[in-house]
Image 1 (spheres, one colour):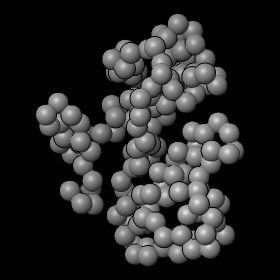
Image 2 (cartoon, helix red, strand yellow):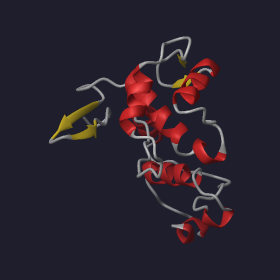
Image 3 (cartoon, rainbow, N blue to C red):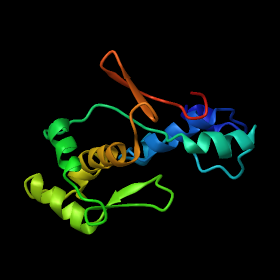
Image 4 (cartoon, rainbow, N blue to C red):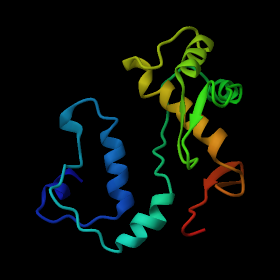
Length: 158
């Protein structure tokens, strides 16, 4: 992929580029970066990208190397209170911990520092994903459960 991005012209779907940008946020060395900072981007079907695709979040999932079980994180997120522990933006598309909420989570997890290098890309990310799912997503609207697996519903495609 890195080679493709070095060409004068690179054709890719918005999702492919979006996921490459997300993965680049997780690298620990510059040599592992894949996507460049282009001078120009031509977008085919821009209305679809800016309207339809903009409503579908890109979720980068993978395995975690943490010791804190996901069940504990889900339980912990379920105990957080709106406004004091987390805030939702005006259009209800984003949610984030407040300082009070971050301190509550850190204390519940044994006094860790969520924003330390050790936890920012693991524990904090999983807390944010769990918080997003708990607060913003509704079963059978944003996702379905089939055969004990969760499947996201693409709002623009159904």
